[in-house]
Image (cartoon, rainbow, N blue to C red; front, side):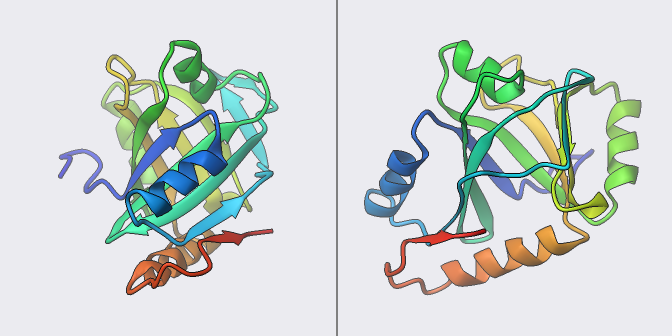
Length: 175
């Protein structure tokens, strides 16, 4: 448990080929089913305080209560994902903490000295997320994500789908 953020709820992997990554997680590690969003639409996305037109695909699955997120950025817009890949890394890029009280946790992180690397919003005000620039070691960026809206409901649906998953319907397209 983090004294600041609580328990880790997601591991986020930045990859070059999201389909190959999903295949690996399903066929080598037995994790699924995957919920795949090929073209994520953000309400806004800012990298280091500047608007950025990031294009990305995301896939989500659970292993127990831990969500696994795969992210493939599909353009060259500025982001922490691009910085991670440009540094020669691929794999675990961040750990995430989910909250029903996003603004409170966001303000607490800033007060503790954390700096926002990138942030955005998906699906309205209750879909906010922020990645704090803590990448002194690959895989240690901290994300906080608001789950007080429909995103939280979707995450719970994904968790439940993984329970007793029989290996069928491995990739489920989300539109």
